[in-house]
Image 1 (cartoon, rainbow, N blue to C red):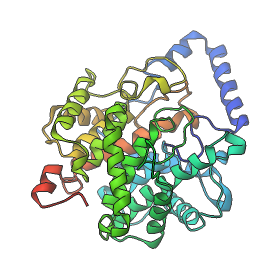
Image 2 (image 1 turned 45 degrees about the vertical axis):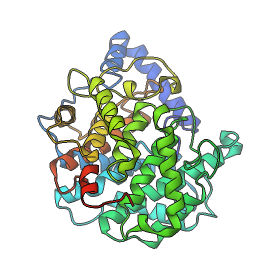
Image 3 (image 1 turned 90 degrees about the horizontal axis):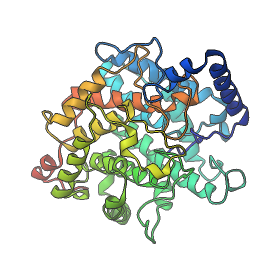
Image 4 (image 1 turned 120 degrees about the vertical axis):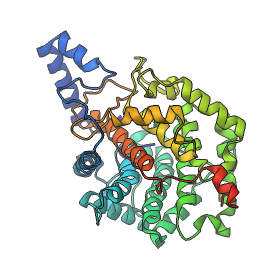
Length: 410
């Protein structure tokens, strides 16, 4: 679900060549000892950076700000009309987490990185018919223009609606972003209700199953949008199609996709019945590691990967997504799995403010730009999960609480 510059497989050949050259040089100079240090710990660099005794929102915000600005200045991220591509590994987690961190830290205004990001989004949404898709059929292969367009439309709406929810008012550009997404929603076929998705066979956000995660995120965005957007008559059919798609596809999705639906069920309780919720929570609990965390390797479909190295250690991205899904779906704060995950996140932040995660697709040097992408996602979602857990006011009401209050899911 990158919706942007194909974070795992950049077309910039010079960048890839430099990365490969550096890797070969490192192995040749340092020998097998350095290789083992790099591959050790789930591909997460075993550097001198140590874990913090307890998590720091200040350091997390600093890391995320630096990484967002770095992404914005990275040549492969540059697009036409002076815009920047969206990336599910860096931009989306940043956009969801940074306003929540700002509230927790008592900051009064958006960062420069946020302002640049939103200006780019506003430009692309406003000039939708003029801007080029992030990928074209001519350069990336048949169907990639349509995949890129639909993926971007969904993510534009997700990010802008999240910021509008923070402001408490739906902007006209956000309404336009939703309209652009609805226009590309599939209306027939086995995937009716969902969207075409950017598929480069890269887990977890650019594979065949990534469309399901994107649809769940849009469902959250619709229900979270201010000014009762979810109640508007003109999108009723779209929402019905979306809900039917999420329910119909749920049994065949890998666990990571089901986590997004568990997250979305905080807003749309009908997505999961009691039996499905209990079964899913049981699977989540069973896949928990002895140290309290979770591994992306255990959550995603293995056939979507380009290599078969088993990345079995707990990582920040998987653990954060599990914690977010559990806490947002309304499980008790005393839930054993939730508490284990929170404790793991609280004690596995690095001194630079990040949480670490490794690529499921290739062995990446975590000190490079590309190698940091999964840690960007881990840090955004971990920060969001911990801030939500600490702030009862930020926690979404459980489905049972909504139903008791007469909430209908719209």
